[in-house]
Length: 204
Image (tube, rainbow, N blue to C red; front, side, top):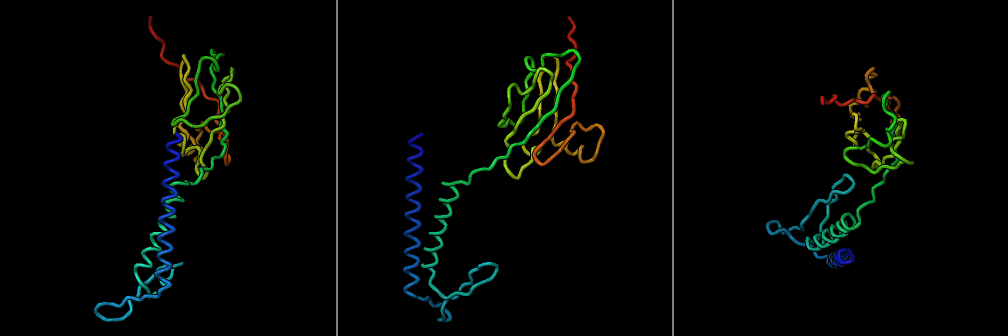
């Protein structure tokens, strides 16, 4: 781990050094005010530089611009690659419950899961003995629960419950009676009480 960090630091310093050198050389070339002539017309070479939606006409030398451009590109590379912006995550509260008249061990004999797996925070067991669940899910800012979580599953030895968040959210927006989603807020999803879908009985 320390070796990887040291290598990243060396790479960062070398890149910053090259960027600084390129920028300095570019400014030195600009200060000399050397203007290149077109080989055919013998007039100063003129280039258009797009800036803030406008083209600025500039008569200068290409080496100076090349050094400056290279230097700024290297700086941007280091800032974006070596120092990636930290992801901001928000807490989403997701709750609901499972029901079955013959089951009273929801917390001991079942497992609640999300797919793809997400960071989950709970107080105690994800599902309590009465079948109620309330979890906090870390979701990246500017994304919704439905965009990140494809499936909620509860697996019990007697059966299972599967919730497809995107499907239920669409049903909620269309006010469908079969919708499993009961309440929607900016960072909250509350599902209705859902029956356990029992596995077929085995014949002995």
